[in-house]
Length: 441
Ligand code: UGA
Image (cartoon, rainbow, N blue to C red; front, side, top):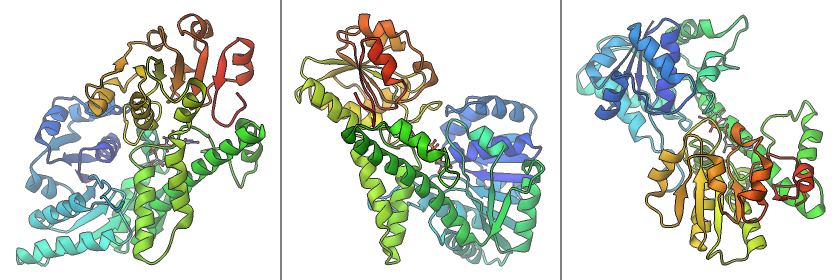
C-alpha cells in the first residue's frame, strides 16, 4: 500500500521503516530540511537498535524515501500517518500545533480520498480537531473531498521500538469510517502473526487507551518507589517484595522495578497531559497527581543518600557516574533522572566524571560546558580517583564489573546504585559499601 508519514522523528521513522519492510511504499515527510538530507544520505539521526539497518535497506529497495515536499507526500499516500511531536506546554497539556499544522497541510494538498491516522500521543478529541482542520483547509480551496480520520496510537518502547512494531502485543485502531477500518486492518494484517492483534474501537477510546496505558505503567513504578522508601525504613528488601507480589498473575512481573524515578519522552509528559485533561473535564485525577509527585521526589533519592553519607557540602568531592540515558539502549536523556542528579551534585560543589555507552554526545548537548563535569571513555576510567560511584542507568555492561576496581580505582569502596544492579550480600562480602534503592545498606 502507499503510505505517507508526517514526521521523521522517533515514531515516524520506526513506523515508516517497519511498514516499508512489509512491502509498503512509504514516504516520510519532515519540515526539517537538515534531517531529511541526512536521512536521504542514509544517516539516521536517532539511536535505536536495528533502525538504521532497516532504513538503509528499505531506502535501497526504493520502498522508503524522505522528502520535504508536502504536495508530493500528500499525493503519494492513501493512508497518511501523523507522527509529529506533541511536546508539553507550560501547564502540562499537550501542544498540538504540529499535529494541527500537519492536518492543515493535508487539507491544502489532497486531491482524492485519504485516510488520515493520528499516531502521535494526543488528547481525547484530537481526531475531531484534525478532522475540522482538514475540512477547513478544503473549504478554503472550495473543495468538498471525502476523507476519514482514525486514531492508531503506538506503544513502542525506546530501545526496542523496531521489535515492538514488528511483533506488537496489540494494534489499537480507533475509527468509525468503514474504509479506514478495512484499509488499516489490511495494512496491519502481516503483523498479526497467527493471532488477531487488532483491537477496533471508537477514536476517543483509542486516544484514551494510549494515555491510560502509560499512566498505569507510571503508577506501578511510583508505587514501587514508595514501597522502596518504606522497605528501607522497616528493614525489608524491595527486590524480595517485588518477586513476592509479581508472582500473582493479577499483578504480573513487569514494571515493578524501584529505581531512580521514571523518565523519557513519554511517561512524564503523558501523566501531566492526562492530569490536565482531567482537570479540564472537572475530574481530579488524584492518583496520577500523586504518581507524578512521587516521581519528582524519587529523582532526588540517590542525591539524598549521597548527602547523608558524604555531608551536605560536596566541595572537593569527586564522584563517578555510570549511565546518563533515561534507560538502557537509547541515547535519549529527556527527563532522565541523571539530569536532576548531575545538576544537584554539581550545585553542592562536587566534581563528576561520567560514562554512558551511547549518551555522552547527548549529555554534552544537554549539560553544555559545565564546570566540574567531565566524561570518561569507559566505565573503568570514570572510577579513577573518585570518592564514590553512582549508577543511574541499568546498562547491561555495568552489571558484571570487575568489583576489585571499586576498591582500587575508587578512593573508598562506596557505591550508590539507583538501579539495584547488584546483590547487596555480594558487595558486603567483597567489602564494598553499597547503597541501593529499597534495600538495606
Ligand atoms: C513508554 C512505554 O513503555 C511504551 O509502551 C510507550 O509506547 C512509550 O512510553 C510511548 O508512549 O511512546 P519508553 O518511554 O520508551 O516507553 O520507556 P520505558 O521502557 O517504558 O521506561 C520508562 C521509564 O520507566 C524509564 O525511565 C525506566 O527506567 C522507568 N522504569 C521502567 C522503572 O523505573 N521501573 C520499571 O520497572 C520500568
